[in-house]
Each structure stands twice: as structure tokens, then as C-alpha cells.
Image 1 (tube, rainbow, N blue to C red):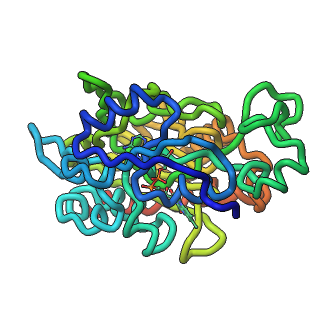
Image 2: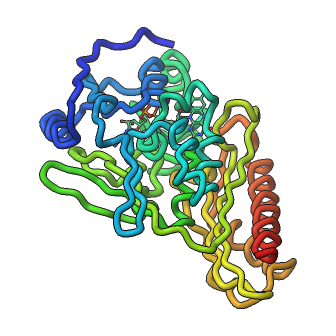
Image 3: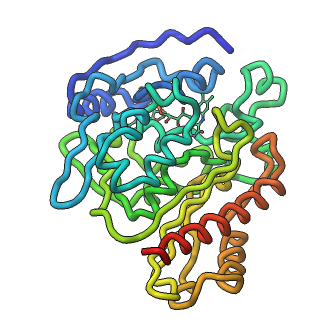
Amino acid sequence: MNLMPELHVHHPATLAEAVRLKAGLPEARFVGGGTDLLVNLRRGLGEPGDLIDLGAIGELAAVQRIDGELWVGAGMTLADLVRHPDIAGDYPALADAARAVAGPTHRASATLGGNLCQDTRCIFYNQSEWWRQGNGYCLKYKGDKCHVVVKSDRCYATYHGDIAPVLMVLGAQVAIAGPGRVRRIGVAELYREDGAQTLTLGADEALAAVVLPPPDARRVGYAKARVRDAVDFPLAGVAAALRREGDAIAELRVAITGTNSAPLMIDTAGLSAQPWGDAAAAKLALSLRKTANLLRTTVTTAKYRRRAMQKMARQLVDRLWAEAGHG
Ligand SMILES: Cc1cc2nc3c(=O)[nH]c(=O)nc-3n(C[C@H](O)[C@H](O)[C@H](O)COP(=O)(O)OP(=O)(O)OC[C@H]3O[C@@H](n4cnc5c(N)ncnc54)[C@H](O)[C@@H]3O)c2cc1C
């Protein structure tokens, strides 16, 4: 680890002030809990000069029910999110995914917004300065070559957030604040498949809240494979939301993380109006294979992560199908 670089830390009291500051300091970085950003800065990954600390902004930690939707502030810590009765009661899969993030001490400071906006990861990037320098840096930062896909003109670092896929299958949106404006987009639209430039946020924009649709009868779950259960990023993660009508799938939504440069929805169009079983599972496995692009971005092999993803998807939908059958 390097010494922390010289930083000027701003402490705005409102979101409006935070985005106004950011508009005037495009290279500055927002900081929520700092559990992702500060580790990277200590590795020499970025030299922002200014940090805009969102920790004092009360409105960012609020949870509000508005017209049936639940607005969860981007500054809410994951520990508070797990404990919140509206989330634990109506969106238990979201609470499960948040509980699966890192370890308890991380979750006490880590925020929802920081989780969604966390940096992508790669074994050629999450290294010390001297290691990266010795290897000629890489396309994601300071270099001109991707060591994972050598002839590539884009970075293949992987997105490893646990929460985004659950929000995607729930059909949640994010509210994004810029100077004088707020816009809403689906969670999937927050990302693009480019490891060096994953977020679609503008330089003057902050994540203000996650907007959850009213709870419904769908069964939702999240499964995660990791090296150490006590504290680790997903090697692969699968979220699914299932609506069952009698012996047929009425709706199945599946999203994956830890596999590509963005969390992605899986095409499940051909799975409706049929029972869940080996035939439907084979179709889902094919769709997963088509979308997931597991590469050598973690110390664990791509082959293992691909198999774990397939197995978790099957087990997760098996479980949701059985639960939905019991009403
Ligand atoms: C040992 C270890 C294990 C971890 N394991 C996991 C894991 O299992 N699963 C997982 O998902 N993550 C994991 N993480 C990563 C990280 O701890 C979590 O993702 C955490 O939720 C990040 O939240 P934060 O508030 O600390 O983010 P920060 O570090 O404060 O910020 C992360 C990024 O988001 C940006 N940001 C923060 N808030 C906003 C906002 N409101 N609007 C726009 N941009 C914003 C920051 O500028 C920064 O680029 C792990 C980290 C460590 C060190």
C-alpha cells in the first residue's frame, strides 16, 4: 500500500451542494463509506486531488415510501439497510445481498450508492503501484494494453457488486442528481460493458436513491460464490425473480454479476408458460453461457466461476419454484 495521497476533502451538507461542487471539480470523487475508493487510492489507483464526502448529507440516508414505491437513499449504510423493517420485510433478497457484501465492519460504513458505483476489478489492476509499473500498467489505468484480452481495445475488468443484480430483477430504478435536475433510469442503464468506464453517470452527477417498485408476489433470491464466506467479492453471483402460475412460469427474470464488466440481465424470453424443470433449466443455462463472459480477471479460474454460476442459477430457481408452489 502507498501512503494516502494529498487530498482536499469537502463536506457538503446537502446533495444540491455536493453536485454543485462536483460540477466545478470534475476530477473529484464522491466518497460514501470509502471501503472501495480508499483502498484503491492507497494502491495508487487514481489521483483525484479532491474528495466530496457524502457522509454528512442526511437526505441521502433516508428511506421514504412515495406512491407505493420505496425510495432508499444512496447514503444508507448496508448495515442499516439489512436491518430496515421495510427492506427486510418486503425485499428480503435485497437484504440478503447486502448482508453478503464484504464483512460486518465494512457494512457498518459501506453505502448503497458506493456499492452500486464501486470500481471494476482485475488481477492486473488491483495490485500495488510497483507491481503494475513492473508489468507495464494496463488499459484500465495508465497503460495501453489489456493483459486479459491482449488484442482488445477495451478493458475487461469485472464488475463484482452484489446488490445491482437483485435490484435489476426487482425492476428497481436509480434517481440521479445533477445541478438543478434529477433523472430516473433503470438500474441496468447505470452500467455499460467497459471495465474502464463502467458507469453511465455524468461527471457532475451523483446517485441520490434507489427506487424500489411496490412489493409483489414474485419470489426473489440471490446466490453468490466466493472464496471466503466471511468476507469476499462474488466470484460469480446470480439473482432471480420468479412468478409462478400453477405449473407454469409466468415470469422469470435473471441477472448476473462477477462475470462481465457490468451486471447483466439474462435473456429468459423463451422460458415463460412452461414448467420449471430440466428442459427450462437447459434453456436458462444456454442463455447464461451466451451472456456471461468469464475471463482471467480473478485468481480463481474462469472455468470454475462459469460452473459455479450455472449450478447456482439452477439451485436458485429450483428453490424459488418450490417456494412459489407452496403459496
Ligand atoms: C475486503 C473487501 C471485501 C469486499 N467485498 C465485497 C463484496 O463481497 N461485495 C461487494 O459488492 N463489494 C465488496 N467490497 C467493496 C466495497 O466494500 C462495497 O462495494 C461497498 O458497498 C462500497 O461502498 P462505499 O460506500 O464504501 O463506497 P466508496 O468506497 O465510498 O465509493 C465507491 C465508489 O462509488 C462512488 N460513489 C459513492 N457514493 C456515490 C454516490 N452517491 N453517487 C455516485 N458515486 C458514488 C465513489 O466515488 C467511488 O468511486 C469489498 C471491499 C473490500 C475492501
